Image (cartoon, rainbow, N blue to C red; front, side, top):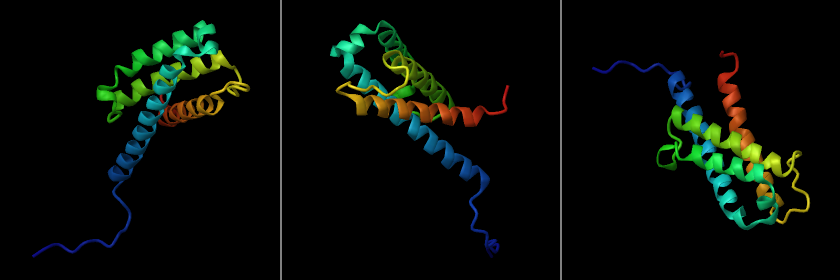
Length: 133
């Protein structure tokens, strides 16, 4: 004889937390791919080459990206590495344009998208660590 089910439609707290983590990880993975692809394509860009700090931060982002297992953000350590990628990416982009507007740059939309995606990951990280020492 089976036990009667309780009619609650709320998902279990662990399930809700897991879904939130999965979404957060997916955003982080997408942001890392966006940033790394953009930085790789900017290697021939004159503005990128002229800004040594942007290039250095771009290299740092690539180093941190190698810490993400198989390029997939599936765990907390992977997410932490993605945060480092996005931090370096934001610094690189700010080196190109402190206001993150990229006015006049032929790849303005892509640069702005990478800045926004990186910011979202940093915001997710801030929400996770808020109130923790």
